[in-house]
Length: 108
Image (cartoon, rainbow, N blue to C red; front, side):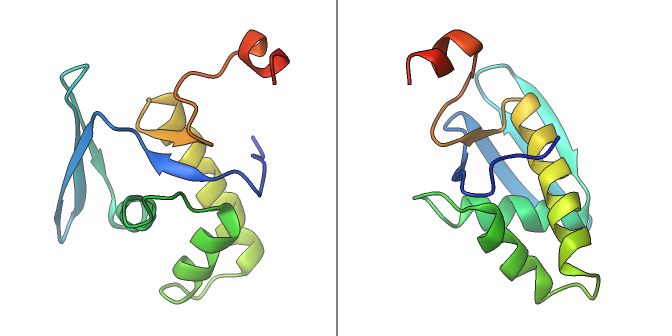
C-alpha cells in the first residue's frame, strides 16, 4: 500500500522500545504486547522515534540511504511497507491519527 509521501509519522505514545545488535523490541504498554524488529526495521523505528515532530517518507529514505546501498526507489517501497505494518499494529501514527477511519477522513 503506497502511503502519502507527505504524511508525518510519529511513534504512538503507548509504545516503549529497547535496542540490541539484533534489532529492537517494542512494548505496547496499553495492549501489553511485545514486538520484535529486525535491524532494518529497528533503524526505521529509531528514526521515527528520534523525530518527535514527525518525519515524512522522504526524510526516512534520506536517513536509510546513508546506511544501505540499494536504490532509492526500493528503499521507498520497503520503508512504506514497514510503516504500513507498524501502523496496522498501532505502533506508529500517521499525521498524529492513531485510528483512521473513513468517517474521520470525511470530517477533514
